[in-house]
Length: 130
Image (cartoon, rainbow, N blue to C red; front, side, top):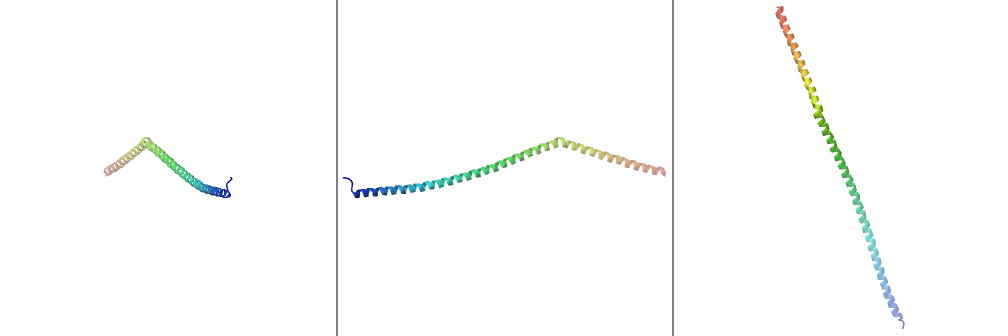
């Protein structure tokens, strides 16, 4: 004998209850999935921000390294020029100073001799003129 109407309604009630339970679970899974997608999107966004920040910091560090390399290169050039001046130009300058000093000394000696000769001749004229 086929099932009674009450049995059919009871089975339909249980089936409806199970379908409602499955629907609630699907809603919960959908909410969890949406939350996970939002969370992973935020996480990726933060990772991209950190990567951009690191990229900027690396760029600044590279600029600093390049600036330091240029400064070191300039120091090397200056040291080379200083060495050239000390080795090649200073001796010439010192020789010019020595020649100038010698010329001044010679001029002073000549002037002194001239003054002395003039004084002697002046003194000898006075003696002669008397």
